[in-house]
Amino acid sequence: MEAYPEGVRHDAQLKHVVLPRQKWFGCACCPPNINRILNSVAQYAYSENEGTLFMHLYCGADIDTAFSGKKVKIRVTSAYPWEENVQIAFEMKEAVSFTYAIRLPGWCPEAKVLVNGGEACGEEKDGYLYISGNWENGDRIDCTFPMKALYYQADTRVRDDIGKAALMRGPIVYCVEEADNGKELSLLQADTSFEPQIIEEKWDLAGAEDVVRLRGRGRRIVPQEGKLYQPFCGYQYEKTEITFIPYYTWCNRGVGEMKVFLPIAGV
Image (cartoon, rainbow, N blue to C red; front, side, top):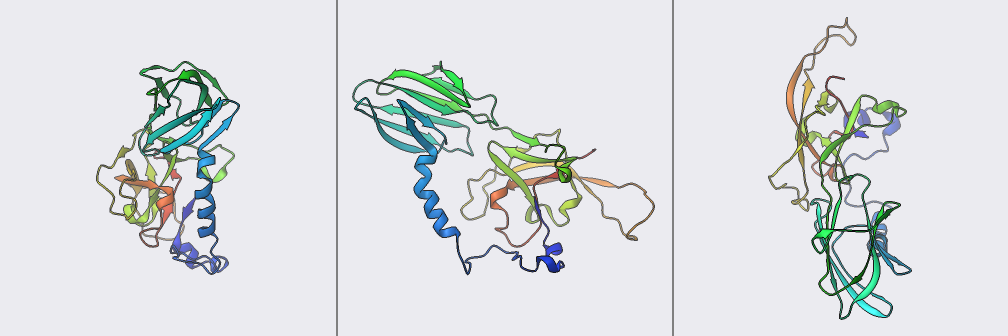
C-alpha cells in the first residue's frame, strides 16, 4: 500500500484519481455510513448469549443488562487502542451468576487478565477467555494488553512485499508519510532490529493530539545522478530516523507520498 502523487499526475489511466482529501463529494456515501456504524457500535462491542456477556471491543462504555432477572451495570474504562490497560467494574444490588467472555487479541500473545487482583481462572476457547463467577458489587477485572511496536512481513506469495516490512503497534497499522520523512520514500529502508519508540511530543494535527506516533531507525539510499541505466556500482546510504503515523491519519497535511511496507535494510 502506497501513494505516489507524481506517478498519478503523469498516468492517464489514473486521471480520475483525486489526490487531496475532499471536504465533500458529489455522491457522498461516507456520512450515512458513519451514522450507520455509530448506531451499530454497541452491538459490535458487546453481545449476550445464554448467560454469557461477550466483550468484543475494548472501548470505554457503560453497559446495563440483566441475568436471571437481576440488573447489572458494567463500567469499562479504557484508552484503547493507544494505552494497554482496560478496567472493568461491576455494580449490582445483589450477587449475580454469569460468564464474562473477553476477546484475546491475536496480536497480543502476552495478554494478562486479573479478577479482583488475582490471576483470572477461566477457559480459553476460540480467541475468548470465559470467566464464570458469582459476581458481586465492586468486583473488578483488569486487562493488560502489552503494546510493542513490531514489524510484520507478508506471506512470500505477496510478490510485491517480499523483502519488506510493515509496522504495527497493538491493532494499529502504521505508515510513513512525506510530511515527516521527505520526498522519495522509496529510498527509505527500515532497520527492523530496532524497536521504534513512542514520540512523546503531542501531535499538532487537529483531532489527533493523543494519537501515538512512533520513531524508528533506518537508512536512506543517497540519490545518484546519471543515465537511466548504467553499470552496477552499488549504493551509498545515510542513516536516518523514520517517523511513523497511524495509517488512517495519512493525507491530512496536504498531498504527499505515503508507504506502509518499507524495504528492510540489509536485505
